Length: 259
Image (cartoon, rainbow, N blue to C red; front, side, top):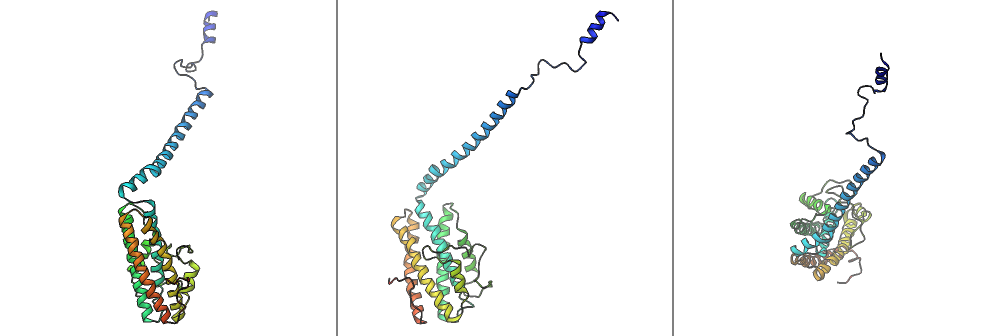
């Protein structure tokens, strides 16, 4: 082997070890830039979603409401009134199996079915505008469909149409708390009748508040008409309940109202 051959053999790198000059070697700076670009894309996507949501809530929803002729006040009334009437259905469903007075039983069925009818009308109004119907409303309709004139199975605290039908917070517009409903459900005979009718008087008076507010402040003609019909019906039902309460020796209205 000549010296020239030896030099060539020693200085020539092994086959496959020569980097391809056309393939750049990634640098740390390149990796950082790439991560930053990815983060920017993710943030931009999230911002786009947020902006789209704000646009929907702030522009498209009000525009849709205006085009349909209703306002937030109308939608709020419908939802509140459904919750309120749903509890009236729940209360009257307690009567079979607890009351022993035929007149009280008949009145409970009458009030319960009227309340279920209002729930159905209000739910139809919401559905026509693609607004979700409160779960309590659907449960009340299911409860009424089972028959408010028959004793329904329950756990001692009253029949329930579903898991959330007994979740009313109470304290607003005459709504009763769980504890108050449970207290009524634990009674029987005349004690039950007096407690139920007294509760219905207070409950119905509370229902006049959102109805009267919708009549004066609402925009949708159909919603205002539903509120007017509800207010008129409630005033008649309250008088019937008060008369029945007085007829069994009850205290009358327990909210201090003389109207």
